[in-house]
Image 1 (spheres, rainbow, N blue to C red):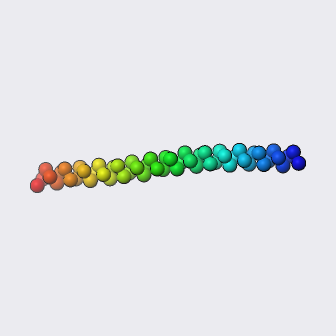
Image 2 (image 1 turned 120 degrees about the horizontal axis):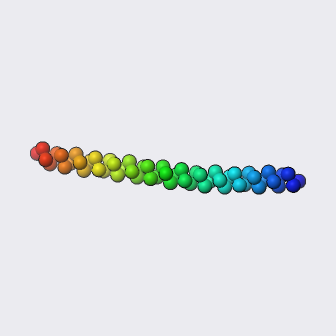
Image 3 (image 1 turned 180 degrees about the vertical axis):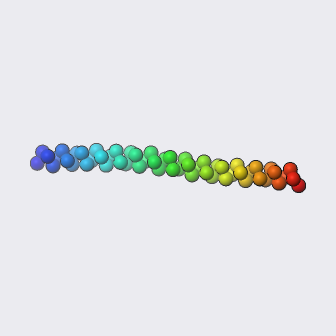
Length: 55
C-alpha cells in the first residue's frame, strides 16, 4: 500500500510540474502573439508613413 501512495504522490508532483511548465509556455505564446501584433502595427505605420512621403 505504501508503494501505491508513493506512486500517487509522484504522479501528483509530476502533474504539478507539467501544469507549471504549461503555464510558462502559454505565457510565452501570449507574448509572442502580442509581439507579432505589435510588429504588424509597426509595419503598417511604416508603410503609412512611406505612402505619405511618396504622395
